[in-house]
Amino acid sequence: IEPNQTLALSTLALVKAGEFYYDEAEELVEKAVQNEPENFQNHYRYAAVLSRQGMTEHGFVSGYHPALAEKMRQALKKAIELNPGFTPSYALYAFVNFVRNEQLDESLELLRKALEAAPQNQRYLLRLAELNLRKENFIEARRNALAVFRSAPTDSLK
Image (cartoon, rainbow, N blue to C red; front, side):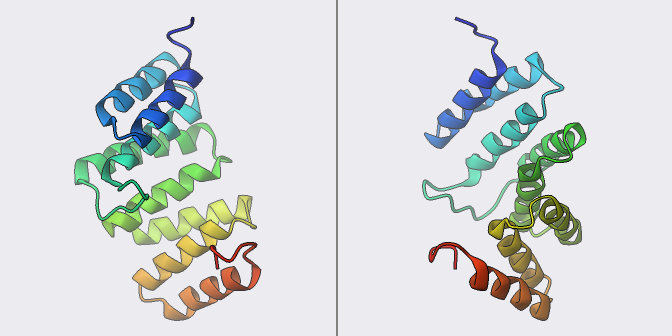
C-alpha cells in the first residue's frame, strides 16, 4: 500500500537479514535511510542488517570485513548523533569493535554511556566485562561479571 514506508522497509530488512537474504535486506534498509535520513532507527537498523552478514543462524560471529565494520560504525555514529538516548546503538557499535578487536577504549566508553541511560541492562554490563577481559583488565572484568551473576534475572544470563 505504501512502498516507501520506512518502518515497514527497515523491519522487513531485519526479517530478510535473519533469513540470510543479505542483498535484499541491504537494499530495503538503504531505501529506508534514503527516504527518511533523519530517522535514527533507520541508521541503527542499517547497521543491524549489516551485522547479520557475519553471523551464524545462532547469532555467533567470528569476524567482520574492515569495510563492512566501517559501514556499520558510520551508520551507528549517525544513529547516536540523531538520538543519543537510544542505547542499542552504543551497544552494537561496541559489539562491532569487540568482534574486530579495535577501538576497545572507545567501546568501553560507549558501554558506560549506555549503562548510564540503562543501568539495569545486564547484557551491556556483560559486554563491558568481555571488553575489560579483552583489554586484560581482569579485576574490572571480574567485578562486571560478578555484578551480572549476582543480579541477572535468568539462569541463562548468569
